[in-house]
Length: 397
Image (cartoon, rainbow, N blue to C red; front, side):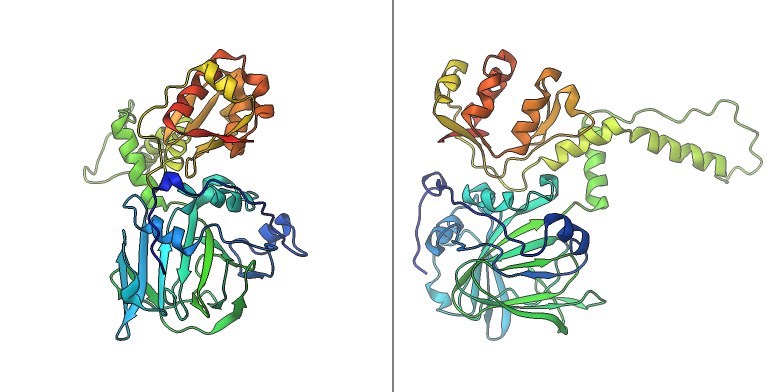
């Protein structure tokens, strides 16, 4: 692979037209019959699929220390994994290695068009888009994922074997590679460009490139309860919340001082549950779910636009949300003008509920979509602030 080095800001600004074809399925039947239940091969889910970037462009991304990348290969039969940035590949030869880049949607605008094809699943469930380039024989080994993934085959061909859920034994083939032992395949298929393999959590699988190839994986996951509770504790501490203590007037006489009675256990449980009201859970989870998992490609310095500049530019240009920027609202609080952006709670006048949904539901905001709101000073001031820090950027419509 030739090495192409370029700054992230200099590459990837076009859009392609991409439509998902589920054959005889509809999104409703897919969610009913397959989502988190069983794997599915979707032949030609994308007609005339084109790679979202070239292998050279991918190598350029993997040169940047802001981008999470890794290489997987074997040395004398032993699995190896290395983390980027990388500046050379020649020593790896022409076969049996793989390059992976995470969070492609943070760096390549085209990747969000791929995500949009799966927007029948809400964005709060989205993890990221991962791209894999593999030479003939390359792969990452047999493994089990804890998330849902749509593996979209780009150029080249890969063979995928998928096993059934079960008590599969896992082991560390390398400190950075958790593999599973051999499994009996319930799916053994060769994916061609435009084909899709959907995998729910828990199904062992192994993909091997039959020729130099690329694949693009759209992953969906949720945090574990352990991670959420840990982050919630930090939220309570940082915001000095949950400080109320148990009150127990009218307590009966204790005859066994070492016992926690059922009534006391109920008081302790009630204290914890009362702390976790809808307002707290909404505010915490809104902030938590909109934090980017990887560094965003923000502008180095604020751009200095004024509201009048924004109005003028919207005469003939659309606004595109920065790749990887998370923007979500809750059904029960959007009417109050509340939504969440990049880990922060944003409050707007309740009259702007419609524009909040537009901001969160659409990656691209056309001049026609925004025109009714450009006389609202509150909205225009906020929009100007977001454009100046790079959350949204102008693109010819």
